[in-house]
Each structure stands twice: as structure tokens, then as C-alpha cells.
Amino acid sequence: MTQEQIEAVINDEPAQQPVVTYQDVHTKIALRHPQTQINEALTVAIAHEQTTFNDAQAKWVIECEQVQQVIDAAQLHNAANPEEPKPVPELPAEPVIDLALRRACYNSEHVAVDLALTTEAEPAKVVFDDDALIAYHHPATEAHSAEHIEQVKRARFKAQRAIDVAAITVEVEGLVFDGDEMAQTRMARAAVVMDDTESVSWVLADNSQTRVKKAQLVAACKAAGLEQTRLWMNDL
Image (tube, rainbow, N blue to C red; front, side, top):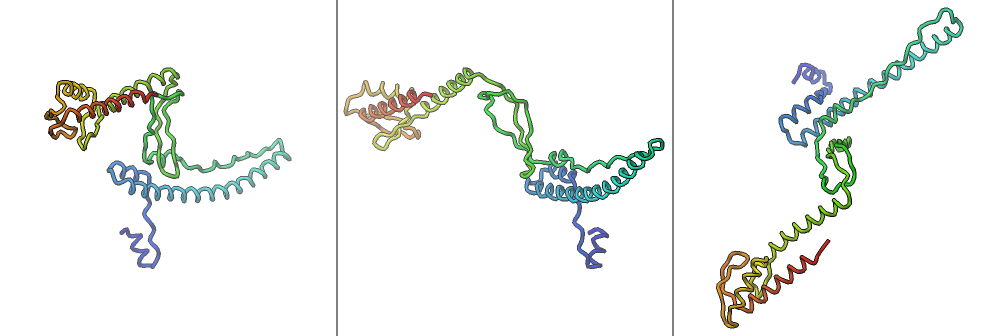
């Protein structure tokens, strides 16, 4: 406790809250304090800045009134005595808040943009949300043609379709079979040489091993083929 706070307690006066500056906020950021603590400190620093600004604004208004009286008197004098003019002062500059100081403390968030599908060329920019205390960073974008965008979408569709086909599984009589293209080939090849009453050892989708009949392999192969056809026909 500072001497000033101790004296305030002795005199039964409310102790003044310590001033939190933007440098204090930067220190918390550098020390990787939780974001909630950083935001709390930033809120206090902003409130202190606003209070200081309000005081300066009130003093500025009073000073402007006083200077304006001097200006008016000087202008009247100069109008009546053009040969002996008095200097006319300027109104004091209005106090302003430098938002750059507080914004430098905002939490940064990078806006996700699909750069391959943008249609307008825009430079990188930062958009500030002064209520949420967040700085949104937008990346630079390019103006892609409709043909380029169509090609990108088509390539992505094909890539995703290949992933979906590779992940096909089908269930037959409670057994879950892999249904990708290689699995379909294996099932078809095995079924061709099997008798209707014959069974073979088979590794299922969960890597467990069991014995399956020809009819089960045929049904699984057919179901997997239908699912692959559905995926292939589900075009853009």
C-alpha cells in the first residue's frame, strides 16, 4: 500500500484506484496473461484515458470562451483602429484521443478468407471493433475470374470425392465391409471363384477377421458400387 493510500485510510477517505496505462496492458500481453485479464486491464486504461480526456475537454471549452472574448475585443479594436492593430489569437486546439494507443492493445483475430475464390482485389487491412476490443486482420485478396473459380471448385470436388470413395463402408448382415475401389475389386475377384456354399476368411472395416459367404461378398460389393456411383453422380 502506498503512503497516499495509507493516509487515505487514516483520514477515512476512499483510496484512489491505481492508474492502469496502456504500457501496463502491453506488459500483460508480453507475459501472456489470460485474455480476460488483458481485457480487464485495457478496459480500466480506456476508462482512465476517457476521464482524462473529459477533464481536458471541459478545460478546453472554458479556455475557448476566454480566448474568444480576447479575439472579439481584438477584432473590434482593429476595426476601429486599423493603423494600430492588436494581434488576434487563435482558439486552442481541441483535445483528441489517440485511438492508435488503445487499438495497439486489442486482441487480434485473423479473418478466414478463401483466397482461391475471391472476386475482388483488396489490400490487406485491419478493421477495429472498439466495443469488443478486437482487431480483425483481413488478408490481401485477388480478383479471380469466373473460369478460375470454377476450375478450383471442380478440383476440390474431385479431391473430396476421392476421399469419400476411399472411406466407403457398407453393412451386410451386421458385418461392416470396406467399400473403396480396391476392396470392391477384391470382393468381386473372390466371389467369382467361390461356390455358393463356400466361405472365406475376410478382414472387415474394423480390422477384425471373420468368415464370409459368397452371397455376403456379392451383396457388399454391389452396395459399395452403388454408393460409389452415387458419389460420382453427385456432381457440382
